[in-house]
Image 1 (cartoon, rainbow, N blue to C red):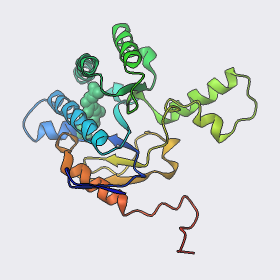
Image 2 (cartoon, rainbow, N blue to C red; image 1 turned 180 degrees about the horizontal axis):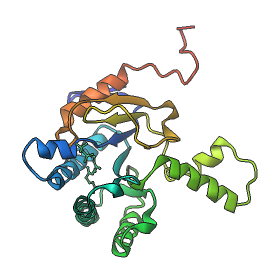
Image 3 (cartoon, rainbow, N blue to C red; image 1 turned 45 degrees about the horizontal axis):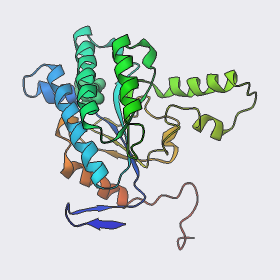
Length: 238
Ligand code: FPP
């Protein structure tokens, strides 16, 4: 554990990967009399801010749930707004080039020009150590099915946990140490179902666009107070 004097936050060395379910954009907007897309825009700003703070704290992997396989059922204007937001987010990210971007999910159904942009961003940032996984058109069950089908294609007839871990979309990242969900819901909504086996969870009522350094520090503090036993016992507590 180290004490980051500058930022007055205690960051546990075990905390290397945080995943966020960025919920509450719509309610944030509604509470201000704004259209839902304004909430997503503010949400994208919060993501940029939190990503930077995480890397400042030595948390080298961040995974965010930006669009689920179920989100297509939202009104077309909202879906279009999120896709447009992703386009401009990628444009900015290409200029920033400060982290390795990886898109997790089924890209194939996205507009062709967007797929090109995504592939380019992944390519030009591939040598950065810190990773930002953006789950877009992502579903946890679909991901496990995808991994199994890849293994079948490879001719496997018997599979191990390691095989699945090495064929899921996040095979380049360790499993998340902490999963944070904002906006008062207490469920995973098909996010990182395989990877969350031993993750810690943190729930807050704060809407994602309001999730800032102070809120992140609360989540980190909560993580630091957890005892991770991985099904075993902690030395000295036998
Ligand atoms: C859930 O809030 C949020 C989403 C479905 C979209 C998340 C998207 C962003 C944070 C910004 C986009 C990011 C990128 C990288 C383009 P909700 O709409 O379900 O909120 P509600 O529950 O209050 O309605």
